[in-house]
Length: 305
Image (cartoon, rainbow, N blue to C red):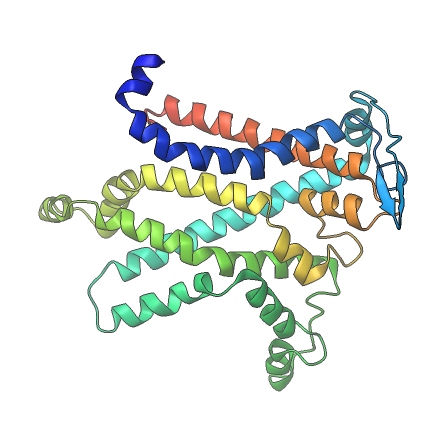
């Protein structure tokens, strides 16, 4: 350790502020959340100040009782199933569309730069602005989508008022937000594949599908594995789309794990801080398990990650 510090002291000095900041804004809240998940803290027994009076905290340590209660609650399984379905749908559709668009934009054609800018635009717009715009489009009475359908003689669709259509809507909006990132990442991967491989394959009589299957997909494997992992983590925790578009409704049909944790801490009465922290720790544990399994599967395939 001493030799490493003496040799690379400048690198350690440059990294130290970042490590310190991450420890303060991530490490401390994480440790505090884990601690609260082992207590019975709620808004009635936490320490608080009312006027000139300070009320001391009276919550106590309960061990793993909160985890046992959450895991035994059928609500957890319902939220977990929909969260997994929502994540798989969003990531798979986003990756497919991103790959298709990246292949199209990797070719030489007139106006390619304009198309690239137009397709990247959703990524540049703040997420909450995009969600509010889609909420207006999905409005049952005055939304543009239903106005178009009405012009074609089709009855208005309850985009955000019907459980099935609400699920379709949140998936569509999240895909719309995620495709630009996927497209840009995969486009960079495509441009790193040597063109000589395609020329040699074409001279050998390989079809377009064969070139795509045996050159493009293997060439994109490293990039694909990374963006799929990142997209999975982001989608699993995608709070803004669900909360701003449907508030978890209608009813609780679009509620995912992270919005349920928010509901426990800020909507339930009394606010259950320990329960919310328990949901948060379980979400972190699930994502860590997924990352470990994903990494092991990559190693079995010969990928280094």
